[in-house]
Image 1 (tube, rainbow, N blue to C red):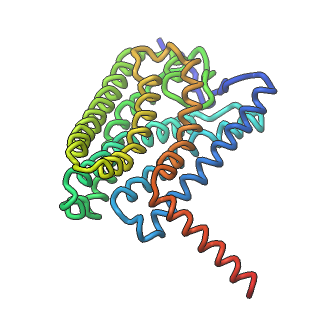
Image 2: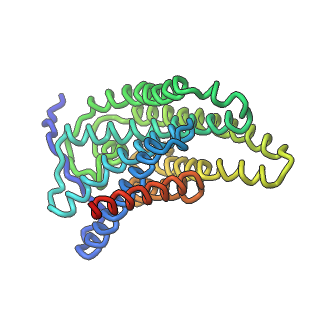
Image 3: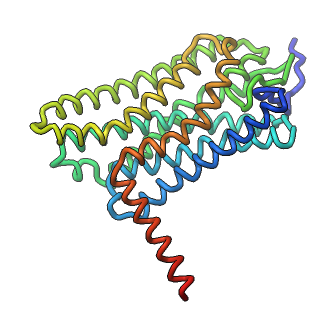
Length: 316
């Protein structure tokens, strides 16, 4: 007979108990979170207000930035609060909510990166038909499809997670509510759930990765046929930012989640999770903006307009 008491709160271990390291970590995470939010909000604003950034590529980039802001906001502020207040408890419902949004936003990001690679394929391989194929309706359908597919993938294992029993411990060896450390402390048999999650993760990664690789295979073949070196350089530069972000995203996710047992390697995953939730969202705006002349020019124009507005206001 089962005689498990219902768990209503979890205790988050965090990353370190060293006060000095906690202060440094707090400053680091606060600054990276601030830079991430500001950087991505700048991209969102530019792609909304600048008439030169109204193409499908910037539509997807804007929504990618929205995902990045949402993803880091789900994780980092809660951890900053824990370090600042010393309150490392989290309710069951709050933990489940955080985990749901972490996973749903993460899965959506993979499909959005796939849509972005298809957009680059059409732009480079079929430039004469680009505006026809990637019209506003198609872009919205792609975006909606990314979220819908993510929900279809996430809801079944997430629903199964509510059946887990916690009898021995409510201490989560992590700084947030992540799947692996939660599976580590449950006293339920998680073998089927872990395998189910593994299969879904592998299929998601393989499907999206194959689509990305196919798109860039055709892109590279097309670029190599361009007659001038200047054309080839310009075409490669428009794709290089996306390739870098894809490499970072897939690399970290494979390291964290694609392994047969959730009860192994949690300590290393905590470090990589910090980088994924804090450093990567900071890097992406810089990767996309510093390598994109149109975005840099749009940013300069916006600064000039803001400065001119302030000058007029002061004169008035």
